[in-house]
Image (cartoon, rainbow, N blue to C red; front, side, top):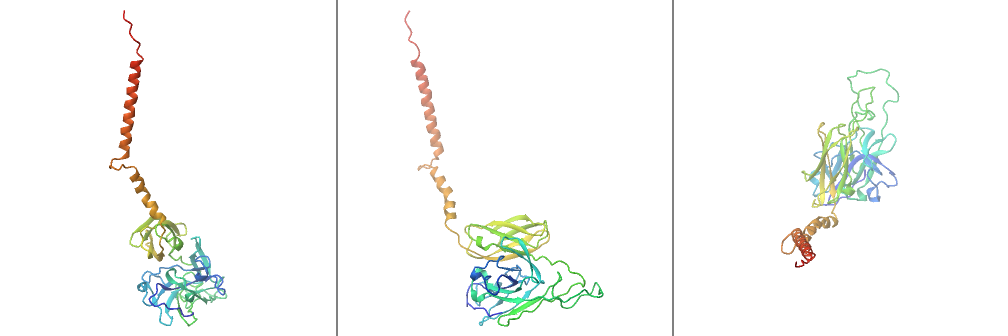
Length: 340
């Protein structure tokens, strides 16, 4: 894994994650080349804050960064760093460009350790891909079944319950394989990873932001909360695969910068979060917000009397004139009396 470029006091840093990239040699997957998450590269989602992180993704901050307290590590002066990455096995679940849950099989596609610029900052110097290969320990079925309660030693992670860690150090070009335990003779399905994914293109002040989540209990109620409750949506009902999707209206006066969206499952207690940057909105929302005030002002006279009362007064005067004219007409139409 190549060393990263260090920006002293710069915003963000580097994300380190395990996943798959399209066109690894050509570099078309790189965000600086227009690569898109879920389309040109996929990874195992996880919280960016080290306090809520489950080990699938690590945030490595620039020295002196304003978000260094949330990081798992800090870049050294030479661009090197050391973090542990959890690899659940050769098959993992991610989210594609449409927000749907997608399965990636690293035995069919080339997976590895990915680094990109953190917090949406695109820097080609901090974008890299280090391949990780998976083998198969068992070329054929075992001749005898061991004790069901026994656990094996190191494994390739083909069993769904395999867990382990992978360490990548800048400049070393190596990554440790996955290690763990599994029950011999069984290959259960891979555990669903709880995660939330924000559509960062819609993360703009005053706009509706799309998001999706996975890993919840099917049918349970899920709520989404922005920061400390400045905005929220829910409850949403998780689908048959434990997935949810929604649209959250961001406040017009929401501060520009890093914010956090947190999803919580009511039945399972599952809680996942993601930090993301919010951009500045346009002036259209301001004009729309002031329009009702202008309409209200137009309905009031200069002397402070509502225009509705003026209309009623004029209507009443017209009615009196009409009645008076009718009476006058009847008087004029009365025939003259002839003296006897």
